[in-house]
Image (cartoon, rainbow, N blue to C red; front, side, top):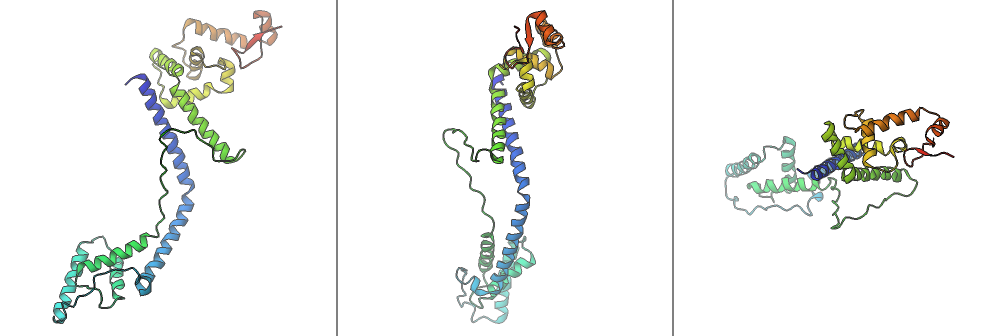
Length: 291
């Protein structure tokens, strides 16, 4: 795998991790509402089931079943009973998952229609079971529609008004994603990181690189190593962040020693010694010419 491909893979993995964390937070926040909704649906199903099994007007408009065709009119009662028992046995054998309550519901629904259903046929019991399940399932919450991604990428537009908490949270997430893309997609940063990894053997996963890049972007780091990202600022920053100078050159080590000595001086001492005054400016190395 090439270095660019590896960084791309790490970026994608981090994006997925961030999205998964946000989704988990959202799911957890919605737990009370889901529990309440589940209770409401369960109660609605209980009431509907009761109506279906006790009030024929609840199902008579749309319950379709195979009607008895009179073929057993001349048969003895024993033959009729045996035919019904066989049909029921065939039906229950095909549905071992049904509880006694569910099976009882099938017979109660059909019982409201008297001798009209042909209960000597297994299909009639199937029709009753399917009807009950379909009516109850209609009360289940509908899944949220899946949005169709546009063919071309579009710029994200914040849906929240300015100065709102929603806007602040949206800006925070967008900054994190933008920084992630900049971190692992920046050639200067990725090349310098790879160089340090090769030289020192440091372990720098995508997550570690992301945290290091955020640290480099902090005001303190920008004052110390420079506002503009350069190969030198990345290397010097990494030496401080990881407390490891094994990959630094002699010149870089000398800069660290010199900067440490200068930072211990007062502004007047700096001016007298090197002609620069330490003002901790975000420009350059934090020093400007004294006057």
